[in-house]
Image (cartoon, rainbow, N blue to C red; front, top):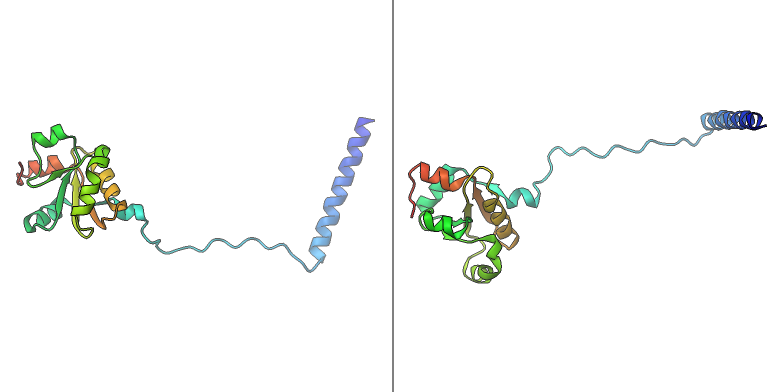
Length: 158
């Protein structure tokens, strides 16, 4: 009994598929494939791309010599006290509640800012650069492995 019902269901299903295909092929209305999304040649840079821009050591030093940038050491106070780029200030992202109001009040949003930390994998400088960007500073860069590269070149330190 079950086998006979299964055979009848298969015959009905096959008949439905054949009938449906025939009606589709003969009928004027066809199902259209959805259009592919348009391909963009180049997308505009995202905010994140602009927020964490890197700066080369040579360009950072050039800006330093011209006095055309504010250098910010993103390392912990102990490391900053042990040595830092001459004239750099120390701002620690985890302590932003303490320094941000004064920094916003006393720093022009058009100021060119270069953040740095130490080590190829150090995230402190790019995180601080992004934080400053999202707090209204439009020209923020970070110097990757900045402290080591700066001091190895013999550039001015304190």
